[in-house]
Each structure stands twice: as structure tokens, then as C-alpha cells.
Image 1 (cartoon, rainbow, N blue to C red):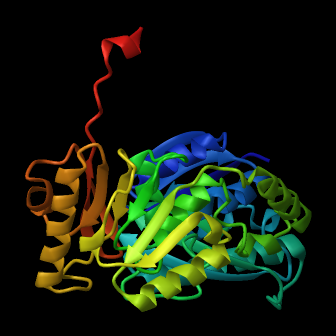
Image 2: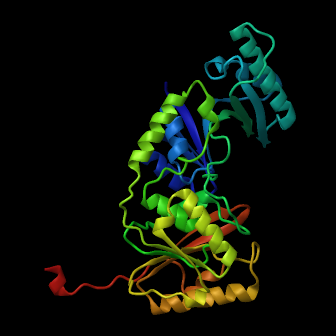
Image 3: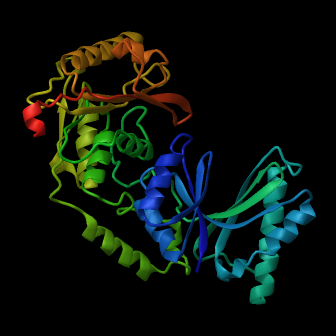
Length: 384
């Protein structure tokens, strides 16, 4: 069965999510702010939830139309073949949003949508009472400039909930954002990756999972696991296939450090849960002690504290100063970091970043600054 799916994403990560979907082999239909629409089938629902690293959730799109009146909304919703998705005992709830639309009352839109679905299912199944004791289906009716999009959430909890975060610290970075930062750096296994402000270890852990090709959703459950559309046997097959894809022999060099003892303890616990504790070296260390060792061209990817989240001005200045000193001493290294500070690139590197990208860390607007290390020139003899 051909299905239209939507992978939602944090603003600024649409291109990353699009690339992940293409890597899974699915055709992109369109990319918009905060979402990527693509074609798949029942198995695509399973594989997308298991494998997408930077998407927030995966939605099944059931309809799109214009509605200027509540009657139009009701009839269009009722016209959808809900019986092909929701069984007689299915439990379904309706959420909604409305922006710049004539039908601006979200509660009314939700109520009408629920009524239309009930009438459609009642006619299809010949019943008037719904026990709603079975699988859960969360329907969302989204109105934007009178255009209605009807979707059902296949994920349940957001995809950032990998299942490995058993210990936490203040202001942790989302797993989906951390994975995107690593992918945007184009880091590869075999190259040293360092996070000197690692907190509970999210960036190093996500990097290790990428390096080992561990499906991020392998250790959690999803709403659509209970659906008839995607039977349990299909989930079992795809999980087994994902386990077979893990590369335990990957050459991973990853280090995470933090001045906070509690953060490092949390990072170690989380790495164990993620199954990557054997390829990440965590240590309690002040950033001023950061040293390259014998590595000439490593990469730093970090989410340092900034005023709106945690940390104070002196702490932040000390971190900036340490990064600046380190990069001057090690010009072949690359530096990637996010912050709300619009002057950070000048403060740390004294020059504009090679690339920058506007992102969001929760509700905070941040910039992802990317400084590429200087490549050593090869001798003429090396070129021969």
C-alpha cells in the first residue's frame, strides 16, 4: 500500500531529515518548514521510526483539503477511509491547531473531527458503541490559511526519546539535535571527536551510535507497533535486520569531558544503556586542561553553557577563552558549537565561521557555528 508520510523536524534540520529519508530509499515529495513529506509503504512506517535520527516524529498523512465552514470540515473528514486504519476497538483521540484560518476555534475543529470519524466508523462496522480498548491512534487536524491537513501519529513519544537516557543533568540537548550536529559536521569513524562540555553525554553517545550504525529507535516502543497496518511480525523483522546492521568493528575515537562529576557519572550510565560505553572515554576535566595528545586533526563538537540556559558570564568567558587558545594551538582541528551568543564566533576564533546554521535548542534560537581546520599542504613528492 502506498502511503504518504510526514517526518516532522526542528526548524533548521529539514535538510538533515530529508537526507536521512533518502538514505532509507524513499521518495521525497516536498520539504517545508518543520516537515518533510515522502512516499512509502507499511514497512516505511516501521523503518522510519527505527532509523530516523534527527526527525521529531513520523506522521501518516490521510488527507489534505480546504475547509471554510465546519460542514465542509465534517464532510471531508468523514470522507476519509478511517476503517482501513482504525479497527472497531481502536482508541482514538483528536488534537489540533489553527493558524490564519476562518475555522479558528481549535476545540470546535477537534470535536467535529471526532464526530466525523465516529460516524464513518459506525457506518463501516455497523456499531454505535466504541469501547476504545485497543491500539491508540492520535489524530491531528492542522489548519493553516484554511488548508486542512489530517494526520495520525505513528511514533507515540517523540523520536528523541531513544530509551538510553536514564540519568540527566540541567538543560540537556535533545538527542535528535545532537545527532544532527554530528551529521552536519560530516564526522566519520576513525577521526577523533571530542566534546569538552559533554554534560550527560548526548553528543558523544549519538556520534557513537552513528559510527556503529545503531538504529536510534532500536530500544524503544512506538504507537504503531499495536496497529494492524504494521503487524508485530514486521516490527520484529525490521528490528532483527537493524541488529544485523550494527558495526561493532567500527574504529571509533570519541572523548567526552565535563567539570561536573555528576554529569560524567550520568554520561557513563547513559552510554552503558545505549550500548556504546566501550567506545567513548568520559572523564571529569576542566576545559582549560583540554589537550590534543598526538592527534593533529581531530574535531570538537559541543554545546557549551549559555546564559539563557545555564552557566554564568565568567564561566562562559573561560570556556570561550579555552576554546580560542586550543584552536590557535591546533589549527588543523575543526570546531563545531551551538550557542545563543551572536558574537561567539568573533570571541573564540576572531573571524566569521566557515559555515553557520540557524537552529533551535528547545525554544531558544541558536546558531551552529562551523570552523573547518586548516589542511596541511602535501609535498610535490607526495603527489607523485
